[in-house]
Length: 292
Ligand code: FAD
Image (cartoon, rainbow, N blue to C red; front, side, top):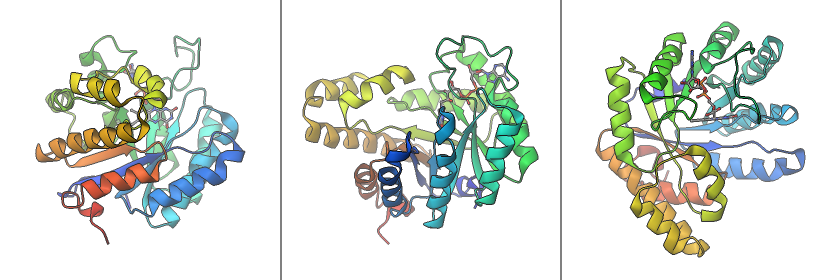
């Protein structure tokens, strides 16, 4: 099923992001975790795409596996450092495995690279035509409520999102954010710029303060006082931190849905227990979270 169809329904949806193994010895553990997450039957699952060449095929494998377990799957694909041939090969494998949805991304710049001027594919918007040429995929893209770190202003970043949407991006998934007001303002700016595709809100349950330090720094997300207090008070107590982090994410999701935002994507960090906990918290609010 195409994700654009799912997102255009009137009911709220909950989807999960997982990541493939970075090395082959981690494959079995990741497969077990992603299977367990798929068995929760979210509306769809996305599988990230790694920067390392040899393990990039795992994205297709995990996405195909998710689909086999009866869940709509979305494979991420990046064009950073890619050649036309390598992209065509990846797209061919996705097609062979029946994957219908792709999140088109540029990917992070390798360390030391400051400009993409000499590259064939400099932006996600350059990747979209290659995907369209390869088959009938539903294409999504990333967006950044607090602007992409490489953009000078939010207005400039939104103008570039417009290019991505005009190229054929049918929905957007946001970078994580911890203050819903930022998301509401951003959505208003997108709509004002004539960007009317569905925007899926990306929520990161912060359940392990230490593990999250790097990710929080990378995302450059604004951390509200209430969130910082949770990290301060419970950061050294894993069980309390997990409970408080799930409660914070649940509260964010309920506020979003109450305000009319229907599509929520959870960055699960491959943790089935956290995904299940959140689903249980939303069992009367999101249809796919109801126990079958
Ligand atoms: P772009 O859309 O290309 O934007 C990058 C920068 O270029 C922005 O500043 C933008 O304003 C500017 N820009 C865009 N288009 C143009 C244009 N046509 N002309 C001029 N400037 C332009 N990374 C991975 O490696 N693997 C993943 O699986 C992955 N999944 C992600 C999922 C989500 C939901 C998000 C939010 C991010 C993900 N990332 C992933 C990280 C992402 O690759 C980085 O944030 C990367 O730096 C930018 O990717 P992009 O697709 O947003 O790039």
